Amino acid sequence: MLDLRVFTQEQEFIIAGVGRRSTALQGGGKLMQLVVKCLLTTPGRDIFDPNWGVGIKSILPSVATKETEKDNMPEVSVAIAKAQKDIIESQVGALLTTDEMLESLSILDLRFNQDQLRWELDLAVKSKSGIVNLSTVGA
Image 1 (cartoon, rainbow, N blue to C red):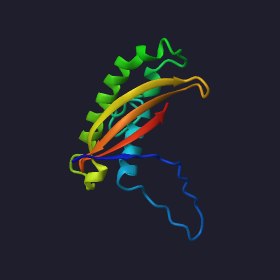
Image 2 (image 1 turned 60 degrees about the vertical axis):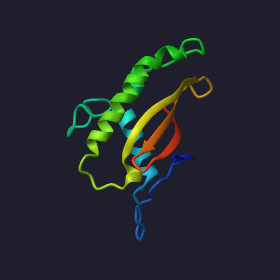
Image 3 (image 1 turned 30 degrees about the vertical axis):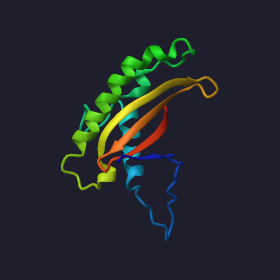
Image 4 (image 1 turned 120 degrees about the horizontal axis):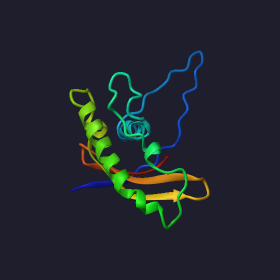
């Protein structure tokens, strides 16, 4: 049976200083961080893998209305499929837990937030452990 969990990623800031240790994200947080990184990375920016990333901000127009926001869904769906492929390929041979490995990535909704003048993508991120995290990503 599938475990459904709503996952909200709060911004965490690492404070540098004497006696302070930074901590890395683990589990679903680490997977979500990788998904967001892939969505926001423009292809060609990663010198080690120039084809990695989808550059979601460059796909979406800077402004949309309620009438035109869904016109962008086909391009975004293709970008989400590429992000899924890129992430799964990047995880081959990596030492990750099943919570940190991507099984599937799908878009549930796309909308333009008129108040904040930004795009919001509702995503379902399923890990290899079967946990589905629902998250809203702003672009």
